[in-house]
Structures are given as structure tokens and as C-alpha cells.
Figure 1 (cartoon, one colour):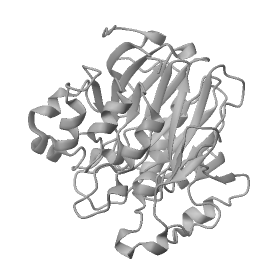
Figure 2 (tube, one colour; figure 1 turned 135 degrees about the vertical axis):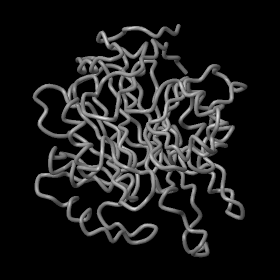
Figure 3 (spheres, helix red, strand yellow; figure 1 turned 90 degrees about the vertical axis):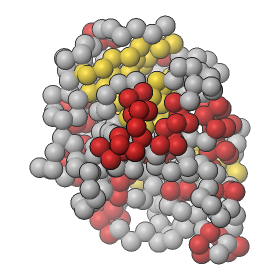
Figure 4 (cartoon, one colour; figure 1 turned 180 degrees about the vertical axis):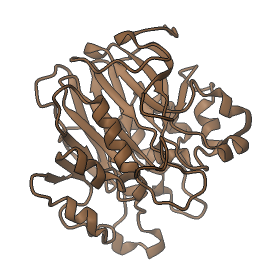
Length: 373
């Protein structure tokens, strides 16, 4: 099933990634060095950006990629431009998982270079829940002339290919604690009523993250922003959102680790339920991933075994603390690209060098067979 070789699109190590082709689903987890950002090119060429991280300066070992000569959002825009389908002039969709700088701080720079047509976030239009959003620049962006902004609606299908694609769906799973039930567009609320909670127990911004599941034929993919797993000591059990969402998401082939793998994410039940063959850690800081999180992810006692774990970054401080497990990743760090063949029966994973803008392939893994639920 697995071979390290030249595969779809004749991708080879040491060469640039071949461009997207019609019928193929490409998902680029961009190694920004300052947060999360992912480019989706749907089988018909429709484009979606999930997050545009641009955390601020001042944290050690968090230089942007490729370097600090531009703002993170500018680097993201340049990367996206290089990989867009021919004749694309902007982004069809952008979705912000939640309102933290390492997920939204670079969006204005991206929009300036690649105008966004439809923007989805968890707060539009009033931005009051669970506390007011006071980011004036972002509030200005969502009402820019020419942009269409919508509130992310859990359970709904808001992101659609602009042209017909057989057996394809992007389903909204959760946002603001409102979880799809798996039936129609019905949801249930996981958070207690705010007026019943002490201020310290109110939902965190991370817990309010939006999440989506992508389906293309037999292929399944899940990404959920910074949704929490095991609660910190003393916090209520409902904080373990991974436990609630896992049965709804079900089995997927690939998933992105929540919250950069930095704390209590990737719980045992979550890993067993999603049963992903490929796991992508969108790491960028020196605490990503936490040693216990990586230990759970790599653990081969849960099927499937083996798992193939990729990380966008592994800072020197993280390598020192993690030790030998840092060498058990399925490839070097960099931009992690999942390329799904037409109809979705197989996929490959490519890692691209993030040290410059040549986008050279430094690792090829696959083909992997997609597994139907």
C-alpha cells in the first residue's frame, strides 16, 4: 500500500511540487512559523483558505517562514499565489476558525493581495459571544466593499464547489459549542448557558473554534482549529470537546491536530474514533507539540498502525524536550500537502521545504488507500 516514489503529478524529491490539476483535491497545511493556515483547492478549482495565522513578535524561536523580511500574512499570500489554479485572481472562500492572532492575524495581508469573495467566521455580525471582539482591523475587513461575510453555521454546508463535483461535501461540524448531530442540519449545544457559569468557567476562545469535515468519494479529512481535549485540572468535564465531536466526525483518513498539539489534545477516545492514517500537526512554537500529545499520536496500539505523523515545524526547544520521538515523524518539517486523486480513492502526502519559496519536495509518502466508513 505504501511506497516512497514519484507519484501523482510526477512529484519527486528535490523538484517543485507539480501544480494542481482538475479533479484533484489539494490541501496545503502551510508552515508559517507564526500560526495556522491551510489552502484547499477543490476538485473544480474552487479555493478555500482556512485561517491565516500571524502571531506577533516577541516569542523566542518563532521566526516566520521563510524568514522575517515580510509579515506572516504576506508570506501566506505569496505561497497561495504560487499554488492557485491558473487564472485564479483571488480566494473564493476564507474561513476563520476563531479569533486568535495565530489563526487570523495575517488575514488582512492575504486579502490585500488576494481579495476574498466569501468570508466565514463564528461571530458575524455582532461579535459579542462569549465576549466582545475588539479587533478594529478585523471588524473593518468583514465589511470591506466586495466581500461577502457570513456567520459559520454548524450543521450546514456553506462552502460549496462553484462547479458541480460528484460525491464531494464540506460539512460544518461545530462552532461556538454548537455541534452537528449528524442528522440534516440539526445541532445541539455543548456549552452550559453563560448566565449559569462563573466568569472563569465560561467557554474559552479556543473552545469556540469552528471545524469542518471534507469528503471526496471515500476520502475524509477533518480540521478543527484549537478545539480542546482533556480539560486542565479543575475545569469542568464539558471542556473536553474532542469527546463530543469524535462520534459525529467518525473515521477520517487525515486529520489536523487541534491547538497545535500543545496541551491536552488528541485524547485516547478521539484518536480511536477518528482512526486517521495520516495526522498533521500544525506546529509553530517551541511548545508544539507537547511530549504527551506526540506520544499519544504516535502510539501504535490504536489502529491503524502504523500512523504517519507530519509536523509543519519542530523548534529546537521542542526537539530537546521531546527527545527521540522527534525522530519518529513520517517526514521532515515543512509545508504538508495532501493530494487526493480524482474520485478520492487514493491520496499522497508531500512535504515542501519552507526555508525558501521554491517549494521543493523534500518527502513523498503514499499512495494511501482511502477507507470508506
